[in-house]
Length: 269
Image (cartoon, rainbow, N blue to C red; front, side, top):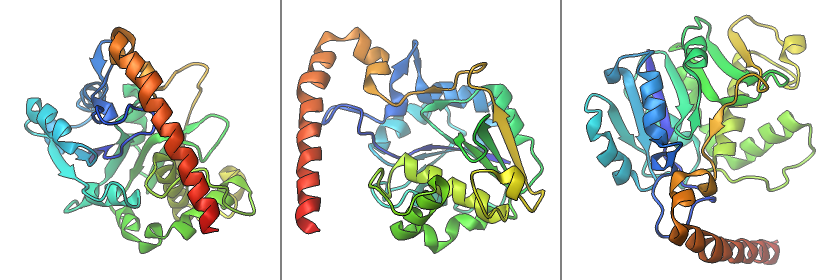
């Protein structure tokens, strides 16, 4: 079994121009990626860990020199469809693979629960939502090639997954094809296809197979730490200069860019 840590994307919540991959920022005194690696090293050997970088990948490459047995792969098309990161992870791999995000701190207990499943797919879910993945799932080697299905290169297909999962008539512009949210909806589609589920909101009712483990966790009992915003980092909290730059310069520029893109999209329509 391999464990793939996905760290290819950039972030809209980290400062422009001076940022590095968000998984290399500190939180509570520790580098986020290091926390994830040290957890999964208790499940598999270091040589069975894969890290997939993309955005400013050289920072990650330099960091991983302290873990020489980890395989580092680069998704140079990280601005393209999110599925490319998963494809890069399984390149030349014929084994069961656990996928998790570099910016989420899943507990050792839950990593083991997902990894130890013998079914075609296992997925850690919010206790009230069967399909809601916490950024970690496992595909059996017999199912791994679903990742290479070209349907996931088509944003129109992803929009249909979004509408299916949320019972909406049409896509409302909530995310882009290269986003982490997009990755989440692709995972939902894996669940739907592998489990032969006709209605995603209640797989227990509509589930026709026994080949998926829905592994629930209770958020009131176990907090899953997600390093999603720059203000959560030690760097932001400990540096007045970074706080001023982030709040007064970077955030303002991002808002201007966002409004410009809205106007451009309206003009295009």
